[in-house]
Length: 247
Image (cartoon, rainbow, N blue to C red; front, side, top):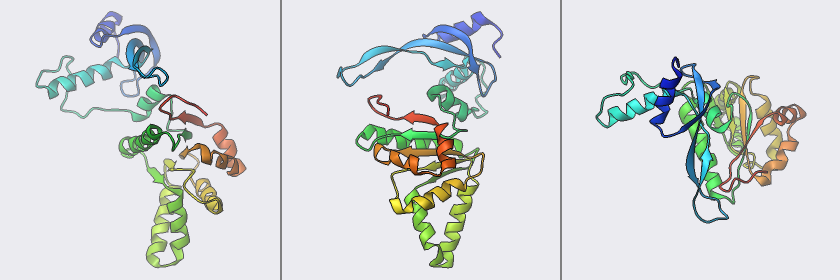
């Protein structure tokens, strides 16, 4: 808990940032006030073909920052500066971390828009999916599904007992997922739309659905059942572009 304002500001001076204000949120780990700071970072606007400095105003939890600093010091062979017990694993609320960094709440639906013609956009979309699986699958049930693979297993379910069991397991994983990633809306044939719609409707009410889509597949959002269309009209939108483009 932050007890002394001056002490907290002194902590931030170690990171060479200017403090703007306190109370911009609550830390999901320590439940103390977050601070907003101001610092400068390099950006690379495409039209300039060179780097330039811009202001960045991140939110900080002083206790998380100090703990991370202590762990780094111990890695380098030094003693912890802020008294962190480095023998205990660092507690991280990844839902809160993403919400603070990207403004995205993964407990709610998300439409991720990227573009095959933008290579960095494709890499970033893949990295985002990997980040969710690596960091959240330890605490909630995450299912990353390619719709073409789902429809293939659905077609093959009567070919043998083994195929039937494989499909039943996949179906169970989808119906019980806390986060379902449809990766992506472009990866199935038009004739398979009904099966994909049925799959999305089979998720539990509390499941957060994350749909990846490219410009060529955006029209399929309008082909979803009306219940899903209304649901996704309220969803968050995450535009992934190497040039900051939105659509």
